[in-house]
Length: 149
Length: 132
Image (cartoon, rainbow over all chains, first blue to last red; front, side, top):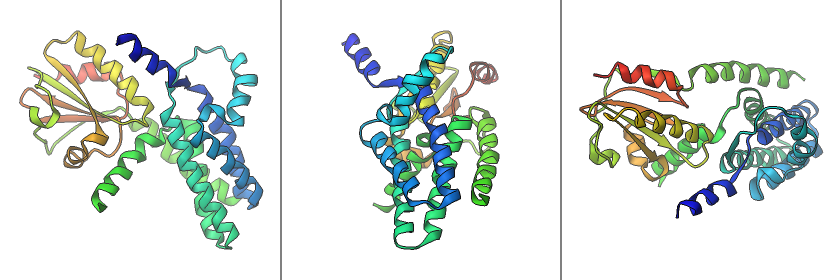
């Protein structure tokens, strides 16, 4: 029973530095999207968010760059984290990216501006301050849902 | 380029506040009274640490291991870890907004302080020392 618990625990953890590195790239890509208003930049980022949200943050191209290029050069000891918090953050990123794409396609530029701004803020906070999006908003979402149903 | 600069400036200000405020134990004036029935566990004879956690929360794990480690050497202190998602009514009553949030209760179950975010080991030990 005890070993089963441990196996379950190790199966769902990843190197915590991976999502942090991915957040750095995401910040740069979203900053480019916001500066250029380019549809294809945000579409590309939406696809990456979708991979992170549905398959897991360790399967995105950014995570592959981390594994192949960055990780072998890091000297600090690997700290693991549960895969669910970064996966949740990727889902929120996907929602914002899809909102932004909708804004551009139907010609409401303000929608694009606001959605990309929030996604950029979250990615930047994650990269620079180790911000935990799931910690701050998941409970609020549940409380709102409880209040309305 | 201007929107990018504005977003990064606001985020940086928020991030600095976030970094400084997480894990700080703040004294509570309007004290909430918690009962063993509410938290599903007996209270510690001196103090109880009530941690609220959720699934999408990396610092909850760190908080759990810090608090569990501390209660091992304090026989009169109890640590309770509550899944916030399964106790939304309690979460609302106690006005828990994010995870991890740790409530510091005295022997009668009165909330005398709370920490939002993972507290540091020394901060918890100092706060516990102040509870008589």
